[in-house]
Image (cartoon, rainbow, N blue to C red):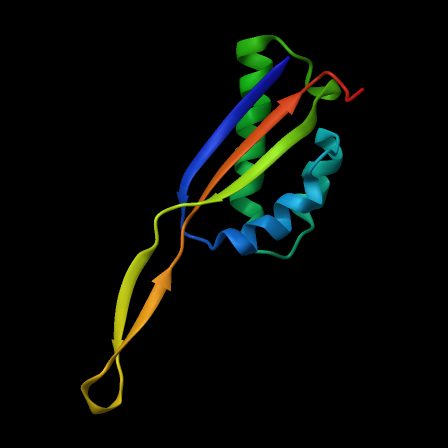
Length: 113
């Protein structure tokens, strides 16, 4: 049984979040939580909260056992970019792109065949 959880508009660049997502893709839940707790990246905390939400969805809504779950897929897509400007020399403006991310985690209790 597959269960998912989504996080939208995370104020972190997708490139930085993908580093954390690649570390837990395909892992068992207890192993993924241990990796996220020991990863020294700012995006590991929201990914851990999202993973815990996906586990709770699977246990409470679908009746799955938390011990048998694993991270089937984790997708990190680019959200809307906030555009800000900084003044530069001679009256010019320098654009700053503040990127956002959308994350989707799918946990399952059916192992890959």
